[in-house]
Image 1 (cartoon, rainbow, N blue to C red):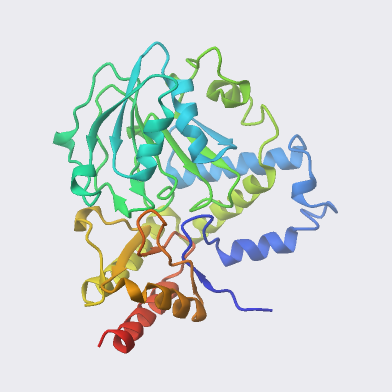
Image 2: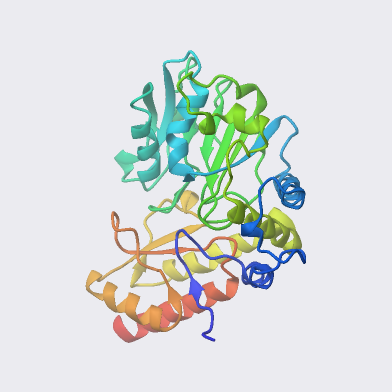
Length: 362
């Protein structure tokens, strides 16, 4: 059997080895029932008990208040770009958006068929190297909601604060940061996240929505995409992504065993600090993002000589350091260091980077 490599993929991303081993052991026979969990009806009492337990553990990990519903849906975070206006606009004609990169821009574009997306601040003038400050947000009191992306996975740009939006609900795309550090859920109207970074495999999308925001979906909202209907049916209005939900539950168990989100935050801080320190002390590698806005989940960096990029990627892969190529839209390198990426992976990456620099940039 080949040795597991260190996977720095931005998503679908690394899963904890212990979770994969348990899923492997249970693959053919779950709970001694003689069938795989992926073969079971989502209405089976044992399955329903399992997903109820998964939600309870997520609530424990994130300290989710009782007046929030947790939905386990399909479609990815990208689908939520359109489902948010369908469910939250009500009688409003616009929503506010903070633009800090590609994913923010995609969310803004998705609003066009429904209502006006008012860009209340943008980091574009700073080449997406620094997020707008709270004082730069030109918020509208009549907006249906304010949307932002706390962490842009492609550019590696992250907010160092939670925007204050007054009585207007704050909506956050936390696909790449959820469960990586403690947050105050009560600051948000809606939190949504694709699973394939810190929750589990692709195919599952998490939506945490405050109860008072339910029940105002447009009449033409398809039933499976109506938050209120899904909440009333425990996310089982239609067949959910059953295996992804099961694996998410295993990840929640694993997180609790690690000491919860606070423990993960300390580890993630150490990982990011180690990697950024190596970049900053180098002559070959650089990261130009404002220090306060550097992502702890997606560390981007470029080489002083782009002609070395292909060799860097080839040699790093040969050393078991996978998926370090930056997004095609920005180039360079990107190391995504989500919860399941161990500190040993960062240590190995830093050692490789330093050795590569000594051999090619002396």
